Image 1: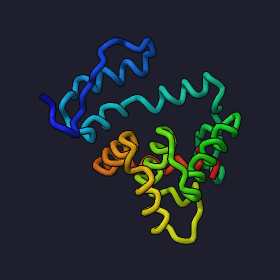
Image 2: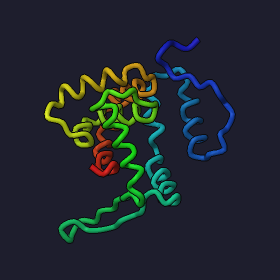
Image 3: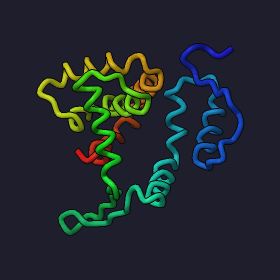
Image 4: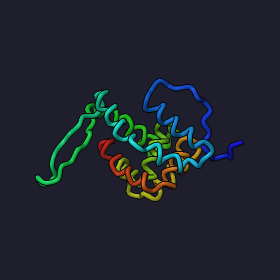
Length: 170
C-alpha cells in the first residue's frame, strides 16, 4: 500500500509516444516516492527533446543571435503566437475574473506561481492579493496542487521557469 501523496502509476501500457513512455518508465522506477523526488529524474534530457518536438511541429523556431555582439544566445520564439494568446486569456479569466480553471490552466498558473512570475504574465498593482486569490482558485485542482508542491520542494527546477513569461509573450 502506497501512502497518500506519493507517486502511484496505475497504468503500465506504453502510450506509443517515446517521450511520454520514457517519462512513464522514470516515474515507475520511483513508485511510492514523494513527487518532488521524481521531478529531477524526469527533467534529464527532456528540455532538448521537447524543444525539438515543438520545432518539428512548427510551434516554435530556433533563433540564434548575439547579445552585445559577443554572447551567443539561442531562443525558441513562437511561430504562431495565438497559442500563447489563448493561454494568456485563460490565465486572465482565472486570475482577474475568478473563472474556474481547467486542468491545463490550473497547472500553468501553478507553474507561474512556483516560479514567482505570475505578475509578469498577468500584471497587477497588488501581487499579494493576486497570489492569494489564485491560490484559492487552483487549490481544488489536484494536478495544480501536485505541480506546485513538487516545484516548491525542488527550487532548482522552479528557477528554470524564468523563461515562461517570455514563452507566453509577456
